Length: 86
Image (cartoon, one colour):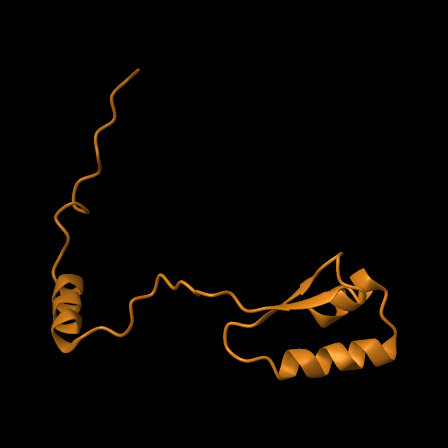
């Protein structure tokens, strides 16, 4: 990623080292992007909200149900679906 950003802004070794330090020190939900409206071409972005579609760890009851569902044979896997001729 650093090489790609450095190449896109035409950075020399010193600028690449500075960019590396910036990326290493980034906190959660901070992003580095290339911005044509900024003099050095690099901008930091922290969005107001970060959305995650992962809801978190499973509870003990959910794990138990998942194990039970995995252990029993699946009814729909026994017979393949029928195909109609078109």
